[in-house]
Image 1 (cartoon, rainbow, N blue to C red):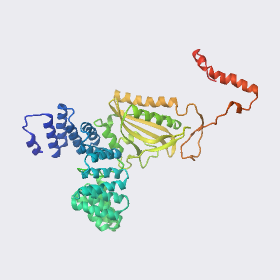
Image 2 (image 1 turned 135 degrees about the vertical axis):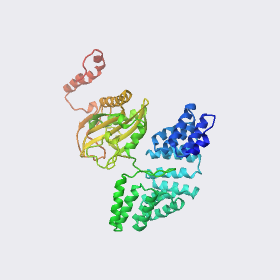
Image 3 (image 1 turned 90 degrees about the vertical axis):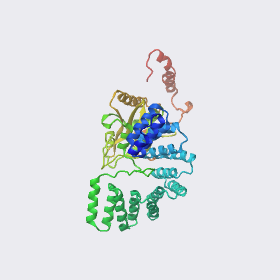
Image 4 (image 1 turned 135 degrees about the horizontal axis):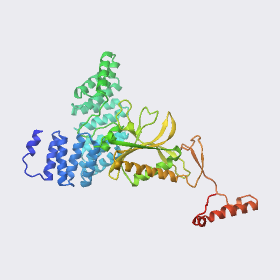
Length: 493
């Protein structure tokens, strides 16, 4: 990093702009920590310096801290809302945090401003691809290639989209072109090798896997793929050696790059939570749990929706999946990495609950929210708790910093839910029966709301003396309730 020092040392002026320049020098020299120091100093002098926020966001991105990157890029967009580059890099941060549609929205804005910039189309394509819109993703990759035929990444990404659609033969030429343009990219060799395995060209696959390993010796996925190719070629000793090496290296880690690449569709939850609380370590959090009966989930869902709409800011929301979760999922498990049974971000799954109105209430089976309220970050996890497929109830867990403010925020949130459940607004004034039956309508029940037809007075067939008693003791009594309440008298039957 001596080059950056030579360019910046000796400058007499330490104004904000100079500090930003130093920050970018450190960043281009591969020193993101030193760059952050310069950007911090610049923002002390000028708290509204958009370029400083943008640079610091880039530095956090270089360190892989995408939640911090997003916060700085949010500020950069606020200060420079018409800068396509700033919008594009914020889209990148959103993509890496699993917010694919938020990334697409940012890429849309950036493309409206700069419609001839190839990397923006490639970036939007990766987010559409991650959200399973393969057709739109391929269209964006083709647009990026048309704008810049020497740009390798859209060729590689187009190959990935075709492979995801089962078109392995068509994917291979795209990977080949990406390798021609950028032979040092291990991903292109890796993906071409996997496509060649799919078309049973195992000898060529071994060559590609070997090149991917040469370029990135810690690429577990390449060792695993080459081992499978060796097995197909009945080279058992070579296969065993690669499997042992893959196990030694551990779980596959995502590979970085200067521009947007297609990331895993299911980001691991522990990384999202740790980034949300950063710099507070997960060891300094506390978890509070409350359990609710299954029958109150409609009121519970409505209460959660109200809190998150009006009283807190949600930075990320998703469903959660674990391959093995016979005893349910605990927020404690979500805070830590589990190589063998990871917790993954997935689309949320809703169940429609009949509450006797025209529209059912859409209730989550499980959901995770990364939230901020009163300048305190916390995490909420809702789960329809089951044990070996038997529903036990609804469980809410809140993780917050282990300090008085964190405790207060957790209690305020949970108390609002308790109040809503106590009011039982979803079922108040309705005729109910508790039962379990077939969900023939596709909507979950457990509580059946009865819709009774209106019966006019003249349709009631009873002796006149009985009708008079009902009139005096029920109808008139109900009319007198307000007066009885003022006198402090009971008004219940």
